[in-house]
Image 1 (cartoon, rainbow, N blue to C red):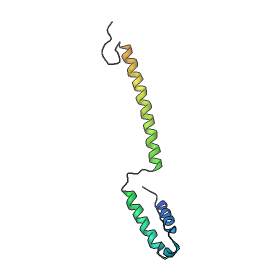
Image 2 (tube, rainbow, N blue to C red):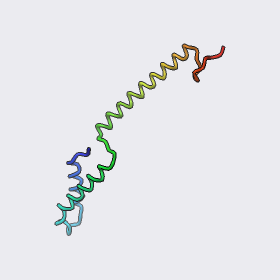
Image 3 (cartoon, helix red, strand yellow):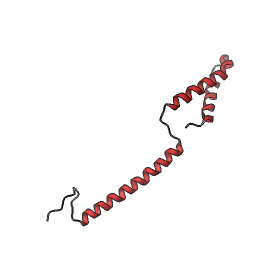
Image 4 (cartoon, one colour):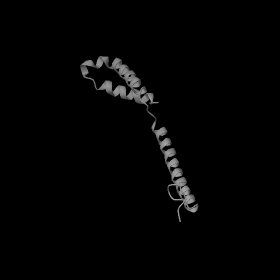
Amino acid sequence: MIDPKLLDDLARRMAGSIPTGLQSLQQDLQKSLRSALESGLSHLDLVTREEFDVQTAVLARTREKLERLERQVAELERQAGMNPEGSPEKN
């Protein structure tokens, strides 16, 4: 989930950028903007940077393991006298 402080800061900065004639509405606008941002972001399938980094590491380990297993299978096939398609080699 998105950090509520981040949403507050973003809404405050957006509300602070309104023209000076509308500054009296700034607090109401800030609340409305925060609500709209929170609602819009909740519909997105977002993850935190930490979750993303964890999944990236898991994927890298899985890829390494897959490559190692592929090499092992190729070596076993070679030792069993099989061609890459999986059928016995003809002599």
